[in-house]
Length: 445
Image (cartoon, rainbow, N blue to C red; front, side, top):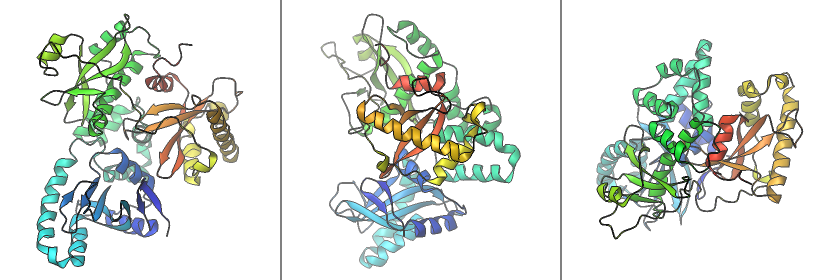
């Protein structure tokens, strides 16, 4: 009867029972709860609050009775599956799972006087749900697991699977296998991935020529940064962090990118919402009041646009401080790194035994956490465009000395109550560019 935290105040109190039913309803085996946690935390509109008549409510409403969590999976008829948890004075727990019809029926079984209202609200919810999930980066987990099963059934697709898994799990760009991989994707998914892997735009090239300091290893690194600024905007709007953005009447956003031009001035960009991608995409550079007025961000010349540089951190995320007791290092996590990501290890260490590599990983984590407690800048943050969350990277030395550049980095991420080792990445120029994204001027001195 294990428990797992979906969020700070949300607990699945009987994990085994919940997964058993979910696997039966979805038709998949070996569902990883971490996939659900990341989906709930990272995707838009995954939490739905109701009173005892299934009227939709705000999270802080005093009469909230139920919270439904979108698992990301569908049943055999294509209906989304939700976990229903009960409100206990702001702390939610439970494990019942089903589609909206099943869960709504449970509500009016407890509150029979509300049966007619619940039935009507359940019908309205289905339509509301379809509108709410438009623009998700990952529509659901059903397609992901179908791809996984297809690869397991047909080993010749392993090469494609590696590319897709790289995108989903590690937030990396798809590599040379993209032309093959895209054949298995929907039209919207192909367009979304094409956006992230496209050549740097003319706007990016113009900005590169304007910069006072450019610490990225290539223009692709700068291009990714400009794109992840757009991915972050929707989160800041949802959090009402108005010190970081301005909106006009068509919901375009202007932000301070944090970049400085050769004269030390802030570089502001206008982003427009792309409904197909579900994120803001860069539109144009702006530096004059005339443009701000023309695009509807200010009304007249008496107003100024002064915004804080974009932040990728939510409240309480800095600094990163953890001990080894804050980590849940599971055999599956080590298997993922040592077996499924073995191709990322240098060739001269791939022949090492699994136990030797596991020892190296555990030692690197232990030493890295000790260093972080002594120097809060040791672990490097990275922003995931897939989950909208911060991961942390620490060096993983295999055959090199600790004072040398590492061969790899360990990616650490918070999952519920604990941190976990998410994956490994080669310490190459692409990874270094990701670290530059959240430390634009950290290497100046």
